[in-house]
Image (cartoon, rainbow, N blue to C red; front, side):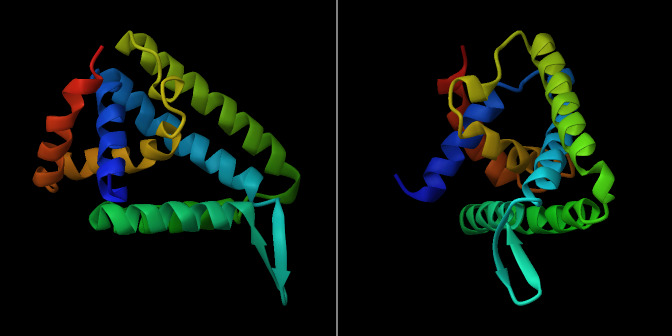
Length: 168
């Protein structure tokens, strides 16, 4: 299976676990909040210094996700790059004395919001079935925004064909 096919399968699994509109709505709040919180925390973990600049775990993680999305679903990859660039700019503005309260608080609140959504769905989160779903959530939410705008119909159709095998 190619990397692109694998990503499509993962997105289809994610879609199957998020059919209820209330669940999807909570995820449009909870997922970005969790991603933001993780980036705030992971940006404190320096991997290496190159001159005056530090390379952080957050930057490496973002680079890897952007590469994955760009290589497999370019339109979502471009949207993700724009979204994450803006989000990371906000991460860099978190005051030093607020880093850990923001990171921990955002992470916990984001997960509470997600679990409320899954109570509406009546189905456990996809990441309990497959941990890689954590990395699919942001891409799927961006895809949903495209679909709502009438863009990406081919992608929506391809995911729809694959989703049935993941229904409970």
